[in-house]
Image 1 (tube, rainbow, N blue to C red):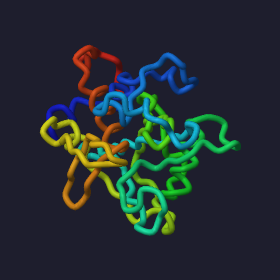
Image 2 (cartoon, rainbow, N blue to C red):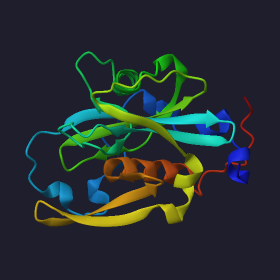
Image 3 (cartoon, rainbow, N blue to C red):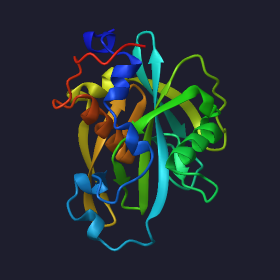
Length: 224
């Protein structure tokens, strides 16, 4: 365990996020998205109206340090087949809010009951070129917990040490041609996994929050 990880308690990690952001989404809040590395991208014509969506960013409190729980999608899916992603999807009419949608998707995709999750805040809204407005909801998970993935959607559930993402050298910048334009995107290659696109962009946001120099993480905020 690194010095950084050994100093964290649940309360200290929770203090990094604005818990009040769990209650509402402000129209003037900061947004991120595919346009971060591609200025003007969202000014291009979109095929459809923007669709509200939510994902859960699950941080697992392991004895050796926090890890990030991720899924690998099955190869036969129509959208994002075989890609690494956070559990999540569209906000359904029956969902109370974005938090409820994120927890529902976690239960449906991973088989992890919401009772094992403590929500601590949200990251910035993430806008995608394909028309989704994604709200990333951060949740802490204390082991042990059950995992029973939906085999139709999820090929694998795995964890990556949070400390891996926090090392700047592990965040790469890649590019590819898409719809006749060159697109740049963040990527985190980890073992046999290639984490990129919106998921990598939200992980970059998570790391920016945790490593923000404006936050005094040595301040006494209590212990759990």
